[in-house]
Image (cartoon, rainbow, N blue to C red; front, side, top):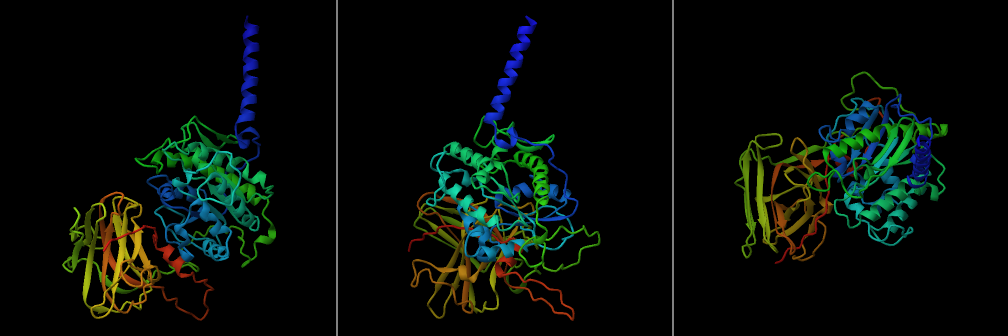
Length: 539
């Protein structure tokens, strides 16, 4: 009897082993010994392309990724909304990766990306920049990219947008660029899952393809590309992608939807912390595997490739290290609200049940005692503005952009920045369409708005024409529009409205060779957010 039981146990164990070998992803089934999960022995420069989920993941008080990377000898920088040439940081959906890595502007974007040393999110990092270019590039799309239409087994297709087939096509295209950059390590972070199960099967199938088949199908021979399945580990408590006792474990749970919700589809603190715990050792494995094959001739300065990691400098960092942008110069302070808000007035559509108030509120300023609080409730089809008109036209032509600090309780809340210009009785209205950012612990984030992005409103002559009258500004405002689908209600706090321009770099007898970043890179360094909103306002 005992022998029969033992034989059954052996047969069951054999069956389980075969099922694991056949059904689980390749990294798990064919795991190899010899992986090195230890931190790099020198400081490595890393940059992370992300939006709101990445912000939360990096934060010390949320996901802790930034601090964990620092503890593992990575000097971390990041991009966000508004970063870079052409504000490329705004665009991180899967189809946008072609613009980043496979377009006529790729060299421009990569020059800015490889040389960026600034922070655009709130996290701890190593105090000393080791110099040289960023070596490790992490990039991630946000959770809307898990709503992939089509079918799970669709082949790559040049047509479409957020579909399984087009997503495969995009990653195949950008892989060609990665193959030209063996001196950089590119790490794909899969998009986090949604709570809605509508497209969950497609998301699962695509991410299985990305982690298991993508590189093999393209016969990719280098070790400078890796994938971390952020999606998978957030779908179940027993779902993992991690280094585990000599193996890379890539195992799935029973769910394809978000198992760590936070009240919406942003992963919770616990989910983000789980991602950090599993990612860091795996990143170290990716790094050491890549370093083992990196060509020696990829270290030449100016080649567009990375240099070997530099030894950590234990001396205090210089106040302005070479290559790091200086703060912008304030040309004109327009309003800091310390004197109140009497110059600001509310205008709104009285034909609908719409209301708006804008008043100075003490004790809420970003750098002072007061800020402008705007409370709005916009009915369907309604609009409202909080506006200041000047007694005489102002000349803003010396400013390269308009800047202000903003605080909001909700992210993704649409609003408009409005500039009024003209002479005599002819008033011209120009606006930029924005959304509120994810709130930081300190409450305020800097926003900037370039002149070229202000467009004349559709209900005036020369609709959509570019703003070219910075020397004839007669007013400024913040506006809201509910459209015809949903009413909108909320609050914003605005502070320190100002004009800024690029910093002046002083020359000396033995100047350090500094590569001045383009305007977009400067904007990134100060955490500028450029978001989209479709506004339609009726006469």
